[in-house]
Image 1: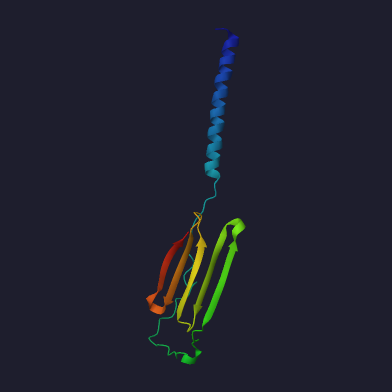
Image 2 (image 1 turned 135 degrees about the vertical axis):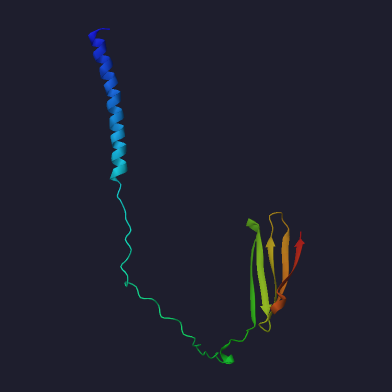
Length: 135
């Protein structure tokens, strides 16, 4: 091997070694440059303990029964009928005594049927519905 070839081989080898050393040094500097956190306990006596609970019971008086609102009768009715855009739906509902509600709602389904739901709501009996489909 000639002297020029030896110098070139040495240069290429030392360049690889230098790159490896720089990569290692930058990695180590990243690891050791991160901030170090520590946790110190707060000084004692900084916070006061809550007082021990007492066995006293607060006396509360219920509001008079006249303050409870009485059920009110109501009526509700609305509808949308747009034949051009294929929309037909609505809702009607009424309560004569404010306790029992009766009504119905309708929706034009995508398949062209009209779904009509007739319902009754009566206190603890819950919601009772009858569903019918019309062509």
